[in-house]
Image 1 (cartoon, rainbow, N blue to C red):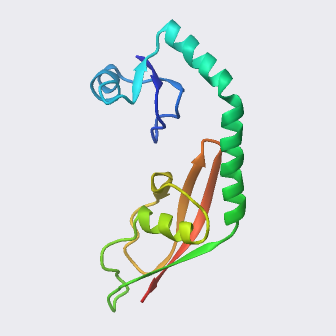
Image 2 (cartoon, helix red, strand yellow):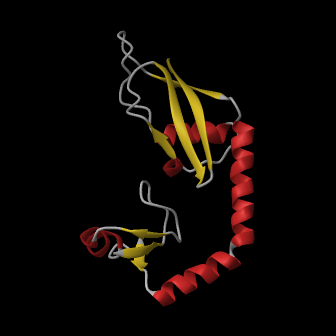
Length: 147
C-alpha cells in the first residue's frame, strides 16, 4: 500500500514522501493516528503542488538547519550528573538534557531530533546524532561528567 506521510517518521520517511508500507501498518497505525493518508492520484497531485509552493520556505528551513550545524561545529557538550563510585550514573542522560544544554549554548534543537546509539548510563564520552533536516545531520560529542 502506498501512503503519503503527513509528518516525519523515523525509519520510514519525511513529510510529503510517498512510501510503500504493509497494509496493516498503514491502515491500522499510520492513517488512524493522522500520520499518513492514502496515496491516491489526486492526493499525489496536491502534495506535488504543495511541495512546489513550499520550496522557498523549505530552503529557508534547510539554511537555518545548516547554520545550526555550522555553529555547533566541533563543540563538545559537558553534562554533569550524579554518579556512583563505579562510574554508573543515577538514571540516564536523556535527549531533553542534551536539548537544554544546546539551548544554553544558543542552539534551539528539538529533543525529538536527537538520537543515541544505545543508552547513556555511565560516565564517559558519547556521540549523539542531531537530525536537523532531512539533508542536514550533525554528530555531537557529549562528555558525561560526575558532579
